[in-house]
Image (cartoon, rainbow, N blue to C red; front, top):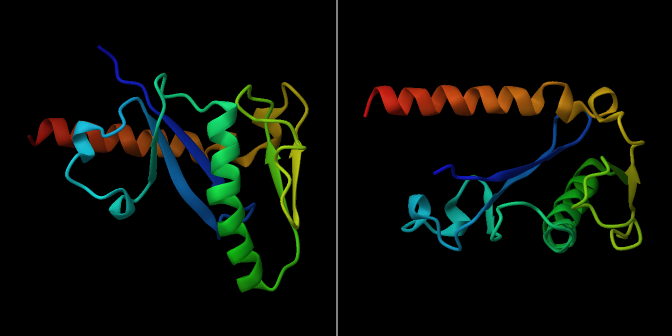
Length: 142
């Protein structure tokens, strides 16, 4: 049986500010983290039956996690505005739902994701490579 998870990755263009990774799993309390407090995890863990991000979850993550983190970073850097570039994934809600003070959401044109979005230009692939390497090391030394 294959386990499925979805990981949401978000950072500014320079990579100097990274929003905490969001891991979407199937279980409300996954066995691998059953004795660990959610606040102690290096990722934000949420659950959804299919382990996919849907528009409701995305909207919640945007308003409850992304907006507060970005506002804190803007204040720290003494900046006034931020832009969130998103692909046209079905889970992303419309721009009207994703309204926040000083944060504009812009959807990139379809079929240009790999060209325009930095996360698709190596960040996600590099993260997958590190995960697979760590998984292999754990299997070899168990």
